Length: 96
Image (tube, rainbow, N blue to C red; front, top):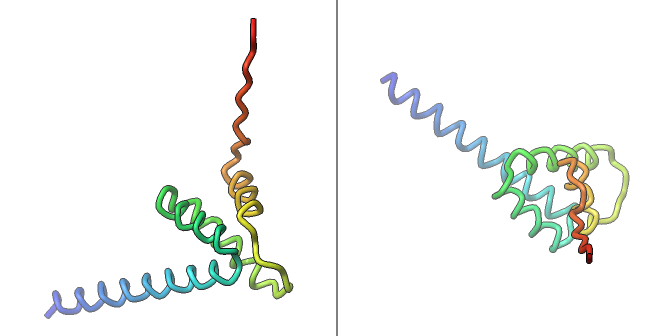
């Protein structure tokens, strides 16, 4: 019987994880434009930690209750750049 209890706990944890992920996706759908949502799905695959940071930030904004427009892809890109601390890459060509 202990194995059955462990299996039940694992199924319950998995269900909670699935529900949490569904809530995250719903939040992103409401707050982001379609192109920004696509970018976030790519971020989720490439950097799950960054994805969770952004979702947490957006959840905090949503809980503030302030009415706001949907976040565009450019605004999301800027937010991601600030969160990673990376600057936009610039390539300079120097001629001799």
